[in-house]
Amino acid sequence: MIDLLEEMKQYAAPRMIPILRDTELALFEDLVRQARPHRVLEIGTAIGFSALLMAENSPKSHVTTIDRNEEMIGFAKENFAKYDQRQQIELLEGEAMDLLPTLPDDTYDFVFMDSAKSKYIVFLPEVLKKVKVGGLIVLDDIFQGGDIAKDIKEVRRGQRTIYRGLQRLFQATLNHQDLTASLVPMSDGLLMIRKNSANITLEIEEI
Image (cartoon, rainbow, N blue to C red; front, side):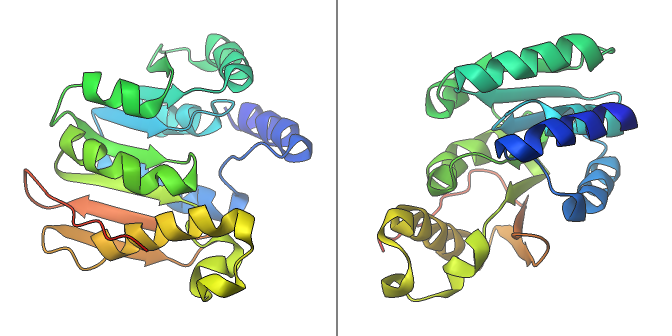
């Protein structure tokens, strides 16, 4: 599996395909091992790197991963066919907001989100329904190269939708009484959210 992951990293880098960075890998692997999830949900498959990594580090888990990009889906299918030897991974094709309501509630122990950053706050209310109490949600690349700490007037216009979406995400989660949310200053930032009670409602403000 180490050779596989290295091969996938070498493929992704020149093509600017987003996968977990080397600086995040050890933490991410530890999180999965400690969680010992029975069922994993991923939003944003790309070429299948993180899904295979989660399957490798949790050999008894079932991994459901969602993506809408036809090109990436093609790469992911090839990689899963070659390397998902235990057949742990299920790939769902389509829009996350169409597929999430079809998944069973209170099912997943671990969720990884690495998709359109402006959509994190859109997906999260539905994702929370799917996660068991005590389950962990990890969201990648939430610092946006430092833009998230700036005043919105300093952010490029083309990035302001992402900025607003992430700011709404922080406001809805960081001080929520039924969530334990932590920002991890590693690579381009992780947001880790622990679900502490059932039937959580998020207050989502406009920015």
